[in-house]
Length: 331
Image (tube, rainbow, N blue to C red):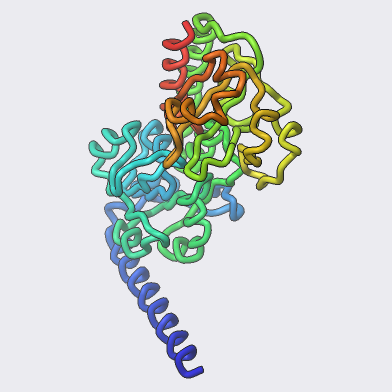
């Protein structure tokens, strides 16, 4: 009992110390009037409407899947979480898609760990924090929302906002930079039209599989970002995968299903298959060497195609790159 009470007091003292440090660092940032933007405006957030700077100048983004949009919108990012959902990277190393932008702006890498580093974030003197969205880093910012809000206005993207166009619009509204959105989407539409005219998609139904560390069969649902892109350029999606898998339970915001390996031949019977090796997952060559996969129709017909992990949940930059990859492969 004495040990339990002592441990509780220690934890409480540490929590107070961290909050005091955060408050002190935030106060220092407030004193630097040269970084403050004048005026505020109300924006939407997963936590409800929130007042943010009308012209944020020191943004910290706590989900690497959202950072690319900020650079596309020419916003100023003082720190960003470098982790992308399912994409392996070295600690502190920014993704290749926006590493050059981060270098040009002097963006700092938010330290990765089991908990958000509040001291580091406060030391950046942010006037706006953006978090939420899909993946573990996004959930970390949700869990630490109260502490983050004590540092600066914190906007969380809803986890169900999975379409990259909707994500772009959400971020653009948050940072008050709507002007670039129409141009970016128009660029995409032009590239999409060009890709449609060049791609000769294989006949038959198509499924998209995530190759994950646990090796449990996992498929993107047809409405997920990558399958939807494939459908737009001419591939025919297998829309019955969830029914074939017995309609397995999944979180409302999840864009994939997982099922027992015993159902693999039943669920993945489409003649065309895309595989995406996520962090710790197996490559296409490794899957070919697995007898369980070698018997699938797509493998037997040699109609299995690999795309990089960055294509799995694309933002504006990676969707453009993915279109290039598809044109190159299926021209």
